[in-house]
Amino acid sequence: MNSIARGFLISAIVYGVLGMLLGLEMGITHNHGQMPTHAHIMVIGWVSFFLFGLYYLQFGKATSRALSLVHFWLAQCAFVALMTGLWLIYSGRNQFEPVAAVASTAYAISFLIFAAAAVPVFWSRRD
Image 1 (cartoon, rainbow, N blue to C red):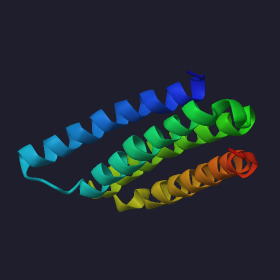
Image 2: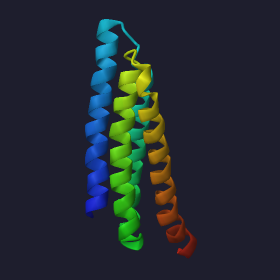
Image 3: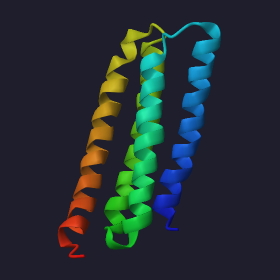
């Protein structure tokens, strides 16, 4: 297994566990104020990172190593910043909205980098 695939798969599992713990905490306390944060952790951290890992597991050798690395690190940093920003916003600290805005833009850019790395792989496949 290549290191990019491994990194995305391991981080997906970690983020999935953190998202589940946040969901459990909300259910136990009957305080669902962090529901948007929970949803973002599960969809970005668990689902999309796991899918990125599966892509790199299957097609990693055919994908630009440089673009893969940029995608991985930008996505990881953007995810952590976005979750921090969302947590703070939904804790009543609206002054952190710019953090979430910049981080979500960075995640979107990381996804475009993924697309730039993945599309040529699919475009060139002939099987």
